[in-house]
Length: 322
Picture 1 (cartoon, helix red, strand yellow):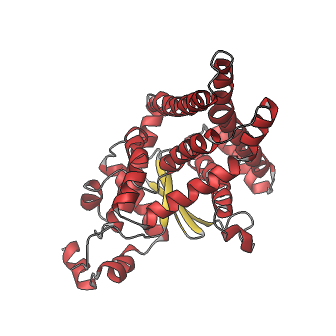
Picture 2 (cartoon, helix red, strand yellow; picture 1 turned 90 degrees about the vertical axis):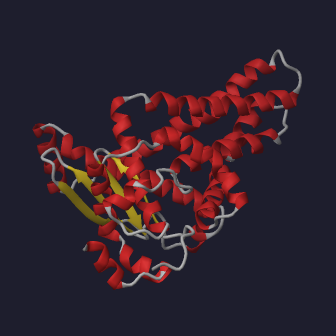
Protein backbone atom coordinates (compact mmCIF):
# COMPACT_ATOMS: atom_id res chain seq x y z
CA UNK A 1 0.00 0.00 0.00
CA UNK A 2 2.71 2.47 0.94
CA UNK A 3 6.24 3.20 -0.26
CA UNK A 4 7.68 3.67 3.24
CA UNK A 5 6.66 4.66 6.73
CA UNK A 6 9.40 7.18 7.47
CA UNK A 7 7.99 10.56 8.43
CA UNK A 8 7.49 12.82 5.41
CA UNK A 9 7.05 16.60 5.62
CA UNK A 10 3.51 17.69 4.70
CA UNK A 11 3.77 21.47 5.05
CA UNK A 12 0.74 21.83 7.31
CA UNK A 13 0.87 23.24 10.82
CA UNK A 14 -1.54 24.55 13.36
CA UNK A 15 -2.37 25.42 16.92
CA UNK A 16 -4.97 24.68 19.55
CA UNK A 17 -7.67 27.25 20.27
CA UNK A 18 -10.52 27.38 22.77
CA UNK A 19 -12.46 24.11 22.22
CA UNK A 20 -10.93 23.71 18.76
CA UNK A 21 -8.00 23.50 16.39
CA UNK A 22 -6.58 25.76 13.69
CA UNK A 23 -4.77 24.18 10.75
CA UNK A 24 -2.78 26.15 8.17
CA UNK A 25 -1.63 25.06 4.73
CA UNK A 26 0.40 27.72 2.88
CA UNK A 27 -1.73 30.90 3.01
CA UNK A 28 -5.00 29.11 3.74
CA UNK A 29 -6.13 28.28 7.26
CA UNK A 30 -9.19 26.75 8.90
CA UNK A 31 -10.48 27.05 12.45
CA UNK A 32 -12.71 24.21 13.66
CA UNK A 33 -14.48 24.84 16.97
CA UNK A 34 -16.81 22.61 18.97
CA UNK A 35 -19.69 24.97 19.75
CA UNK A 36 -21.65 24.83 23.03
CA UNK A 37 -24.47 22.97 21.22
CA UNK A 38 -22.02 20.21 20.18
CA UNK A 39 -21.79 21.08 16.49
CA UNK A 40 -18.45 21.77 14.79
CA UNK A 41 -18.12 25.22 13.25
CA UNK A 42 -15.49 25.52 10.52
CA UNK A 43 -14.19 28.86 9.25
CA UNK A 44 -11.80 28.93 6.30
CA UNK A 45 -9.80 32.09 5.64
CA UNK A 46 -6.58 33.24 4.01
CA UNK A 47 -3.61 34.86 5.70
CA UNK A 48 -0.56 35.66 3.60
CA UNK A 49 1.42 37.32 6.36
CA UNK A 50 3.07 40.69 6.88
CA UNK A 51 5.33 41.77 4.02
CA UNK A 52 4.53 38.47 2.26
CA UNK A 53 5.16 40.03 -1.16
CA UNK A 54 8.70 41.14 -0.24
CA UNK A 55 11.61 38.95 -1.37
CA UNK A 56 13.73 39.61 1.71
CA UNK A 57 11.09 37.95 3.92
CA UNK A 58 12.14 34.57 2.51
CA UNK A 59 15.84 34.97 3.33
CA UNK A 60 17.28 32.58 5.95
CA UNK A 61 17.31 33.96 9.52
CA UNK A 62 15.16 36.95 8.45
CA UNK A 63 12.23 34.70 7.55
CA UNK A 64 12.17 33.36 11.09
CA UNK A 65 11.46 36.79 12.54
CA UNK A 66 8.51 37.38 10.21
CA UNK A 67 7.25 33.81 10.71
CA UNK A 68 7.19 34.47 14.45
CA UNK A 69 5.31 37.76 13.98
CA UNK A 70 2.81 36.06 11.65
CA UNK A 71 2.24 33.24 14.14
CA UNK A 72 1.46 35.78 16.87
CA UNK A 73 -0.96 37.74 14.69
CA UNK A 74 -2.74 34.69 13.30
CA UNK A 75 -2.74 32.99 16.69
CA UNK A 76 -4.43 35.98 18.28
CA UNK A 77 -6.97 36.17 15.46
CA UNK A 78 -8.05 32.51 15.65
CA UNK A 79 -8.08 32.53 19.45
CA UNK A 80 -10.46 35.50 19.47
CA UNK A 81 -12.64 33.73 16.91
CA UNK A 82 -12.88 30.56 18.99
CA UNK A 83 -13.57 32.54 22.17
CA UNK A 84 -16.48 34.32 20.49
CA UNK A 85 -18.54 31.11 20.67
CA UNK A 86 -18.30 31.14 24.45
CA UNK A 87 -19.02 34.80 25.17
CA UNK A 88 -22.27 35.80 26.83
CA UNK A 89 -25.06 36.99 24.54
CA UNK A 90 -24.52 40.70 25.22
CA UNK A 91 -20.79 40.51 24.45
CA UNK A 92 -21.49 38.43 21.35
CA UNK A 93 -24.03 40.99 20.14
CA UNK A 94 -21.52 43.81 20.61
CA UNK A 95 -18.91 41.83 18.71
CA UNK A 96 -21.34 41.23 15.86
CA UNK A 97 -22.18 44.94 15.74
CA UNK A 98 -18.50 45.85 15.49
CA UNK A 99 -17.96 43.44 12.62
CA UNK A 100 -21.08 44.70 10.85
CA UNK A 101 -19.92 48.32 11.10
CA UNK A 102 -16.57 47.44 9.57
CA UNK A 103 -14.70 49.02 12.49
CA UNK A 104 -10.93 48.63 12.56
CA UNK A 105 -10.84 48.74 16.35
CA UNK A 106 -10.50 44.94 16.57
CA UNK A 107 -7.39 44.98 14.37
CA UNK A 108 -5.91 47.82 16.42
CA UNK A 109 -6.57 45.97 19.67
CA UNK A 110 -5.09 42.82 18.20
CA UNK A 111 -1.95 44.72 17.21
CA UNK A 112 -1.62 46.24 20.68
CA UNK A 113 -2.10 42.81 22.28
CA UNK A 114 0.60 41.26 20.08
CA UNK A 115 3.06 44.04 20.93
CA UNK A 116 2.32 43.74 24.65
CA UNK A 117 2.73 39.96 24.47
CA UNK A 118 6.18 40.34 22.91
CA UNK A 119 7.20 42.94 25.51
CA UNK A 120 6.06 40.72 28.40
CA UNK A 121 7.82 37.67 26.92
CA UNK A 122 11.09 39.58 26.45
CA UNK A 123 10.87 40.99 29.97
CA UNK A 124 10.11 37.61 31.54
CA UNK A 125 12.45 35.33 29.62
CA UNK A 126 15.24 37.72 28.61
CA UNK A 127 15.47 40.64 31.04
CA UNK A 128 14.49 38.92 34.30
CA UNK A 129 17.25 36.27 34.07
CA UNK A 130 19.70 39.04 33.17
CA UNK A 131 18.66 41.05 36.23
CA UNK A 132 18.89 38.05 38.57
CA UNK A 133 22.35 37.10 37.31
CA UNK A 134 23.45 40.73 37.60
CA UNK A 135 22.42 40.70 41.27
CA UNK A 136 24.54 37.61 41.89
CA UNK A 137 27.34 39.13 39.82
CA UNK A 138 27.96 41.55 42.66
CA UNK A 139 29.10 38.60 44.77
CA UNK A 140 30.55 36.37 42.04
CA UNK A 141 33.59 37.67 40.20
CA UNK A 142 33.76 34.91 37.60
CA UNK A 143 32.14 36.28 34.40
CA UNK A 144 31.70 32.82 32.88
CA UNK A 145 29.90 31.54 35.96
CA UNK A 146 27.58 34.57 35.95
CA UNK A 147 26.79 33.94 32.27
CA UNK A 148 26.03 30.28 33.04
CA UNK A 149 23.76 31.31 35.91
CA UNK A 150 21.87 33.67 33.61
CA UNK A 151 21.27 30.75 31.26
CA UNK A 152 20.15 28.51 34.13
CA UNK A 153 17.72 31.17 35.36
CA UNK A 154 16.32 31.56 31.85
CA UNK A 155 15.70 27.82 31.49
CA UNK A 156 14.20 27.52 34.98
CA UNK A 157 11.85 30.46 34.42
CA UNK A 158 10.69 29.03 31.09
CA UNK A 159 10.11 25.52 32.46
CA UNK A 160 8.46 26.93 35.60
CA UNK A 161 6.09 29.02 33.48
CA UNK A 162 5.11 25.99 31.38
CA UNK A 163 4.53 23.85 34.48
CA UNK A 164 2.51 26.58 36.22
CA UNK A 165 0.06 27.19 33.38
CA UNK A 166 -0.29 23.43 32.73
CA UNK A 167 -1.93 23.13 36.16
CA UNK A 168 -4.86 25.34 35.11
CA UNK A 169 -8.05 23.43 34.25
CA UNK A 170 -8.89 25.43 31.10
CA UNK A 171 -5.30 25.16 29.88
CA UNK A 172 -5.46 21.40 30.28
CA UNK A 173 -8.33 21.21 27.77
CA UNK A 174 -6.37 23.49 25.44
CA UNK A 175 -3.42 21.11 25.74
CA UNK A 176 -5.71 18.19 24.85
CA UNK A 177 -6.66 19.97 21.63
CA UNK A 178 -2.95 20.68 21.14
CA UNK A 179 -2.40 16.93 21.35
CA UNK A 180 -5.17 16.34 18.81
CA UNK A 181 -3.53 18.81 16.42
CA UNK A 182 -0.17 17.02 16.67
CA UNK A 183 -1.74 13.59 16.33
CA UNK A 184 -3.46 14.55 13.07
CA UNK A 185 -0.25 15.89 11.53
CA UNK A 186 1.78 12.90 12.73
CA UNK A 187 -0.88 10.54 11.40
CA UNK A 188 -0.67 11.72 7.80
CA UNK A 189 3.09 12.39 7.89
CA UNK A 190 3.59 8.77 8.95
CA UNK A 191 1.52 7.62 5.98
CA UNK A 192 -1.70 6.71 7.77
CA UNK A 193 -5.27 7.54 6.67
CA UNK A 194 -6.79 10.44 8.57
CA UNK A 195 -9.45 8.74 10.67
CA UNK A 196 -10.16 8.72 14.38
CA UNK A 197 -8.63 5.27 14.97
CA UNK A 198 -5.31 6.04 13.26
CA UNK A 199 -5.10 9.55 14.71
CA UNK A 200 -5.64 8.27 18.26
CA UNK A 201 -2.71 5.86 17.96
CA UNK A 202 -0.37 8.54 16.60
CA UNK A 203 2.11 10.45 18.74
CA UNK A 204 1.10 13.70 20.42
CA UNK A 205 4.65 15.10 20.13
CA UNK A 206 5.88 16.77 16.95
CA UNK A 207 9.27 18.25 16.06
CA UNK A 208 7.78 21.42 14.50
CA UNK A 209 5.78 22.36 17.60
CA UNK A 210 5.77 25.94 18.86
CA UNK A 211 6.87 24.64 22.27
CA UNK A 212 10.04 23.29 20.67
CA UNK A 213 10.59 26.63 18.94
CA UNK A 214 10.31 28.53 22.23
CA UNK A 215 12.69 26.11 23.91
CA UNK A 216 15.15 26.59 21.02
CA UNK A 217 14.86 30.36 21.59
CA UNK A 218 15.76 29.88 25.26
CA UNK A 219 18.66 27.51 24.57
CA UNK A 220 20.07 29.54 21.67
CA UNK A 221 19.91 32.69 23.80
CA UNK A 222 21.89 30.91 26.53
CA UNK A 223 24.65 30.08 24.04
CA UNK A 224 24.67 33.48 22.31
CA UNK A 225 24.67 35.53 25.50
CA UNK A 226 27.42 33.38 27.01
CA UNK A 227 29.83 34.72 24.41
CA UNK A 228 28.83 38.38 24.81
CA UNK A 229 31.46 39.81 27.12
CA UNK A 230 31.11 43.56 27.67
CA UNK A 231 31.59 45.33 30.98
CA UNK A 232 29.07 48.11 30.49
CA UNK A 233 25.74 46.93 31.91
CA UNK A 234 23.66 49.27 29.76
CA UNK A 235 25.41 47.97 26.63
CA UNK A 236 24.84 44.39 27.77
CA UNK A 237 21.14 45.09 28.10
CA UNK A 238 20.91 46.81 24.71
CA UNK A 239 22.75 43.93 23.02
CA UNK A 240 20.34 41.40 24.50
CA UNK A 241 17.37 43.33 23.18
CA UNK A 242 18.92 43.79 19.74
CA UNK A 243 19.80 40.11 19.49
CA UNK A 244 16.26 38.89 20.17
CA UNK A 245 15.35 38.87 16.42
CA UNK A 246 18.64 37.12 15.63
CA UNK A 247 17.94 34.44 18.22
CA UNK A 248 14.40 34.01 16.88
CA UNK A 249 15.80 33.68 13.35
CA UNK A 250 18.32 31.01 14.36
CA UNK A 251 15.69 29.10 16.34
CA UNK A 252 13.32 29.15 13.37
CA UNK A 253 15.99 27.67 11.08
CA UNK A 254 16.60 24.89 13.61
CA UNK A 255 12.91 24.04 13.94
CA UNK A 256 12.52 24.23 10.15
CA UNK A 257 15.41 21.82 9.69
CA UNK A 258 13.98 19.48 12.30
CA UNK A 259 10.66 19.38 10.47
CA UNK A 260 12.26 18.37 7.18
CA UNK A 261 14.93 15.90 8.29
CA UNK A 262 14.81 12.70 10.30
CA UNK A 263 18.27 11.52 11.31
CA UNK A 264 19.99 10.81 14.61
CA UNK A 265 21.44 14.32 14.90
CA UNK A 266 18.04 15.93 14.37
CA UNK A 267 16.45 13.57 16.89
CA UNK A 268 19.03 14.55 19.51
CA UNK A 269 18.52 18.23 18.68
CA UNK A 270 14.74 17.86 18.93
CA UNK A 271 14.73 15.73 22.08
CA UNK A 272 14.47 18.58 24.66
CA UNK A 273 11.50 20.10 22.83
CA UNK A 274 9.80 16.71 22.54
CA UNK A 275 10.24 16.19 26.28
CA UNK A 276 8.78 19.63 26.98
CA UNK A 277 5.75 18.75 24.88
CA UNK A 278 4.83 16.15 27.47
CA UNK A 279 3.73 19.18 29.49
CA UNK A 280 2.12 21.24 26.71
CA UNK A 281 0.17 18.39 25.07
CA UNK A 282 -2.30 15.97 26.64
CA UNK A 283 -4.08 12.92 25.23
CA UNK A 284 -7.31 14.10 23.54
CA UNK A 285 -10.61 12.27 23.44
CA UNK A 286 -12.20 11.13 20.18
CA UNK A 287 -14.52 14.13 19.96
CA UNK A 288 -11.53 16.47 20.07
CA UNK A 289 -9.82 14.42 17.36
CA UNK A 290 -12.90 14.79 15.15
CA UNK A 291 -12.62 18.57 15.48
CA UNK A 292 -8.93 18.45 14.50
CA UNK A 293 -9.66 16.20 11.52
CA UNK A 294 -12.35 18.63 10.32
CA UNK A 295 -9.82 21.45 10.45
CA UNK A 296 -7.23 19.49 8.45
CA UNK A 297 -9.71 18.43 5.79
CA UNK A 298 -10.85 22.03 5.26
CA UNK A 299 -7.40 23.10 4.01
CA UNK A 300 -5.46 19.95 3.09
CA UNK A 301 -6.15 17.09 0.67
CA UNK A 302 -4.60 14.35 2.76
CA UNK A 303 -5.70 11.58 0.38
CA UNK A 304 -3.81 13.18 -2.53
CA UNK A 305 -0.81 13.63 -0.21
CA UNK A 306 -0.81 9.94 0.78
CA UNK A 307 -1.18 8.87 -2.84
CA UNK A 308 1.73 11.06 -3.98
CA UNK A 309 4.03 10.57 -1.01
CA UNK A 310 3.33 7.05 0.24
CA UNK A 311 1.98 5.31 -2.87
CA UNK A 312 -1.61 4.81 -1.73
CA UNK A 313 -4.35 4.12 -4.26
CA UNK A 314 -7.97 5.25 -4.34
CA UNK A 315 -8.95 1.59 -4.01
CA UNK A 316 -7.08 1.46 -0.71
CA UNK A 317 -9.17 4.32 0.66
CA UNK A 318 -12.37 2.62 -0.51
CA UNK A 319 -11.33 -0.57 1.31
CA UNK A 320 -10.57 1.53 4.41
CA UNK A 321 -14.07 3.01 4.39
CA UNK A 322 -15.63 -0.45 4.10
